[in-house]
Image (cartoon, rainbow, N blue to C red):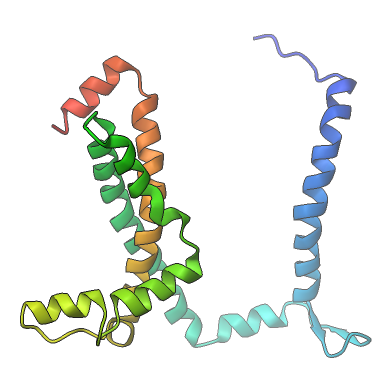
Length: 192
C-alpha cells in the first residue's frame, strides 16, 4: 500500500477549516470547562472551586432518577422508531400510485418545529377534554386519559417518536435505495 505524504498546499487549504472548527467548537467547550470549575459570585469576583460542582451533582439524590428516566426515554424512542422506520421504509420503497405524495406526507412531521410539535400534541391530540385521543376514547365508551398528568414520560416519548420517525424512515429508505439490484431483491424477499 502506497501512502503519499500530505503536501504543504493541502495543509494550507485545510487550515481555514481547522481554525473554524477550533473557534466554533473547541473554544466554547473550553469556556464551559472554565466556568464549571468556578463559582461566579459576580463578574468581578470569581472563586475557583475545582470539582466541587461535579461532586455536588454526584451526591444529588435526584440524579439516579433522572438518569433512569433518560435511559428509559432513549431506549423507548429507539424501540419505537427503528422497527416502524424500517417498516415504513419497506412500504414506500416499492413503486405504487402516489408514492411521491406518500413519501412527502411521511417525512412532513420531521419539518415541524419542536415547540409546535409539543403544542400540537398537548392541545390537539392529548387534551383530556377536546383532544383527538380523548374523542377516540369517548367513541369507544372509555374514560379519556389525561396523558400529560398520568403518563408524562410516555407522552413525551410519543411526541418525540412521532417527530423523529420520518428521519429514521428516511435513513432506512436511503439505505434501501443505495443497495444494488441483486442484494436489494434478496434482502427484501426475506421480508415479503
